Length: 119
Image (cartoon, rainbow, N blue to C red; front, top):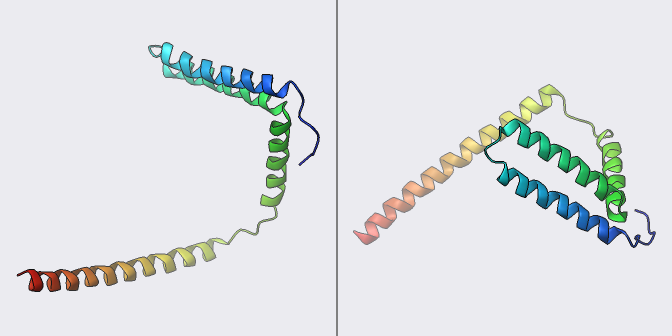
């Protein structure tokens, strides 16, 4: 992240971003009788505008730098093969079944004991 001092206009930009978002929320409510497609498209456009304005601020720029770094790191991940994924899923499935059976048995025994004690 950069250590540059935020611009004096950053606060004004964040106010504009909040106004755009609030306008989108209000507009979506106000135009509730319009087809959903038009409202979604309008909200997407407003979200892009708000995001662009936010990216012009110091914190917005830092966030974009973080996202770019994250994309670089995600490319370095070694993803499991299909066989590894299948085996791991089967192991988890078996352990869930075993745990479920143990909990069912424990619940049955405790229920039986409670009925003996309470009559």
